[in-house]
Image 1 (cartoon, rainbow, N blue to C red):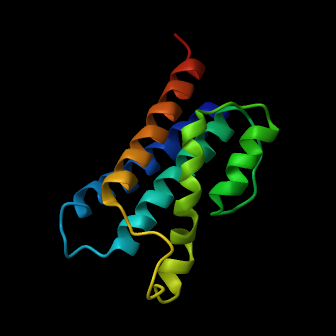
Image 2: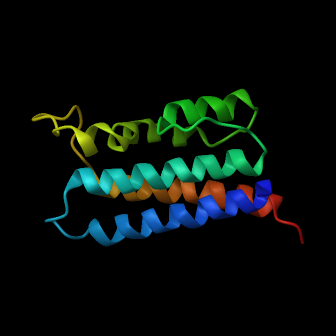
Length: 134
């Protein structure tokens, strides 16, 4: 698969996670860890889309910090405020397969999660447009 095609595929998959997250957020019965999982998955796929579009190899990982490090290591700049996505990394594995801690370090903020995913998507879509011919 060509880099642009791979990036577009990852963005489509990321939009599915974002769609699911958006449907769950307004429902107070939706578990925070499920919303966090879909937010993390969306952001992970978006970062991998940018890496793919730029022909940068990455290993299979759910670690958003590692993906940010790979972007930085390959001179792919991103808005500084995207660094806050680090807070989503635990939702990839810990909150899905372990018990949620009784007292999380920081309260789960659904509005922040939505804003964070939208911010990353806007940046990724701009990168995608830059690499799309025509």
